[in-house]
Image (cartoon, rainbow, N blue to C red):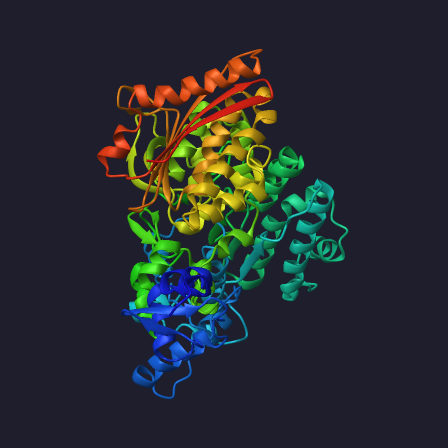
Length: 626
């Protein structure tokens, strides 16, 4: 006889370990979960059972015996942005046709904007390795890649040009002076990399030596990239390629730390010299998260070709396509995990291409195929917190819709700049889209020349990011300890305890309510969305029966209870008046038949709350569940 408290169902065990149900079943079948037993056709697992430490190894080996025999699978390139290493020593997804598409078009300067950790740095290093003239024969890194089969006209560009390469991805300092010093050091290192220029035949040798000795003036620093292209052109007899990776990191840091104007001015002057009307430049490449409006950085740069997430060109080269993920899953023997990978990391849309988050997919495979919010830890998510601090009623309603897996239409300006978030809160959706926090389900051109997009959350991982940030910002309304207790009660279907905890939530929210007014109401709804998003659809101010209820928690799963809240507020109420007001709110739920929608959907148990507020006092009336 089984004592249920001592056992877990296969679904609960899979959720606890962060794996799929099929994966948990496989471990049971292979006898690798101690004590697992089948009861009426379903696996039951001891509550204290441990996930096997070699969970990944066993699955991969089983596949290898059938598909790869003795071949050992390649390691995964986590954090590897060196193309030579990634393409020769790790599992590498071939993106070299980006080179073909570029050479078919040959724009003078190309800007690629993509969210963080979507392969920008690796692709730029690929371009450097392909184009750069070095003592090493670097063609060996491409002979087995797709670009090599495209023809001689493409291969002729390999190893032909001097290259200037800078990455600003780590330029994250808290003051402008520290930022400027670090950029100067990076440029100094790039000058030193081109030691062939330190020769008496170089007419600009004095400038070169001031750069490598760190004695260049501020004005010389802003001219440094242009001067480096001039020297390289004159020395090698062919114009160089210039690549600047993550160009907008100093700008984003400047916005966060109060030196935005200084950063923009410096970057504008640095880029103007090297990219604008520079006869010593062959090609230029830039990557970043934001395009940044031409008037702020790229003023007068008419030869700039912008490739944003809404453009079809190059859309498949940053991130993984479904076919690439399927092939990767097959290689590591987990093709049956594809649906889970889609739920967590798919959903992005660049141009007309469906895209997976590459950083998260690689980490999923590397962490024993366990889903988790790997992208969350790769950078700051402060923008969501800032949005909450600036949010008006419309923004709260749209955040609410996103958390409920809904979508909405909005104008999108891909040239959004950081200060616009404060000056024009509606620009936040443009920022969230280009930064990877939203996906564009549909895109069309608006009469203004901007885009009109239907946006939504792309996947479970991004939902997790919103939930975490929203809960942290709403802690004055929904204390974390209480939030955890409520989630546990919902997970266990413990209706009596859930009733007590919801009453406590309403009571403890009072001190915030009398100072926050609407912020409390919207914050409470968002908090409930976050707490209950897996088990309930949370809606507010919707029609049902003969009126509009305040808050409804519609269960997603058959058999779970539903909840309806009606909130009232009056000033200077006595305890008796407050209780009467709560009773009135409860009575209104029945009289107006607010539970009609739930009943029509077959919800069997409906719990009704009437809550009344007056200053820091609260009264709650509750109808027994029916």
